[in-house]
Image 1: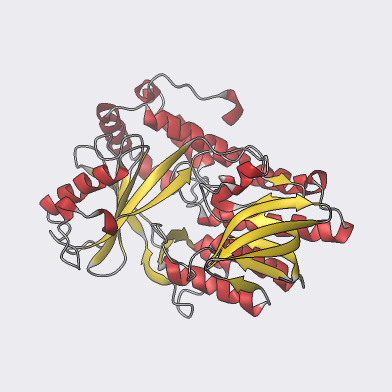
Image 2: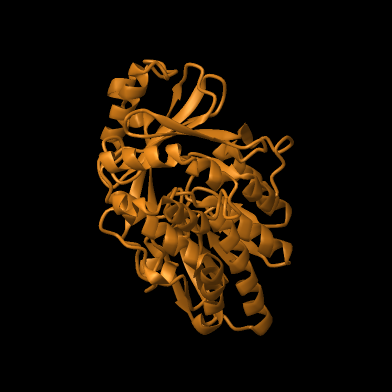
Length: 408
């Protein structure tokens, strides 16, 4: 194979965004994707903010990625009571994730990036003045060479660990399927330790009669999801069978998609001639499991660091460490506060969750937070701390955790 300036492993949104940026700067870029098609086997709720869509350069109408817009959501307590949060302006886009991935890849290709599909990366080695990547391409082993490599192939990648960058040890598993609905028009989020222990479940409409249903769990996510589907069917919210006739109460494993979600970042996201970006780096919101926007932001910072490395002809870990300083300066505190909030919620019983819902509703805290200067779809740190202050003096409900000084 020819020698490239940059090798990018993974053709998801983050990998394609890096590819677009660097190819646009004139570098020769190769993107290696293990699946046969861009966007294949995606497991994602597909909700992004307007800010994220604008950052990605997505046009709501012309790009064909947006299935639905969301102005509001219903947040359900364990009892079934709910709080409705709403704003006049559009808060989020619900994506066709496969189309979104393809759209970003096409933008990168127009800038000159080359894509190699069905190319599973078996190993990566840094030696001398290059990076070598061994790829299994439909049974044939090929070698790609580049001056720098960017790993963006998602959570559970073994490549960072093999390069001595450590591994992500705290993670959850998302399980999701698509179902027929009976008139669901708003995003619904369910908070209950019985439904999704330590996390939450969702019902996200993607069209008039279809919705994505899923949840997060540390273990047995498929079993919890099947129980949740049965509850929704019993409530009449979803059809008793999927579009293909599969019984939802005994939902076959083949109809459920799974995805690992990191809760903490990789110990180190840079090395000699290598950067790690997106889910592979753990650049994911611990509160919601959303990783697209943070990944895109970090992709920009990775592009900047690589461009500067080319300018200095220095691809050492010392030079590329600037990438980690950049993304931690921008997102480090957000991830820290989000992780604290996730641990705090994990320790709540359904009784306490119910009581917190009651306090929020009785004091209109949810309305106040919508008008808070800290309100943001993507940045939750300020909103979390604002919410905790508004809950005082009822914070004893939150259990044994106190707020660490370093997140205040």
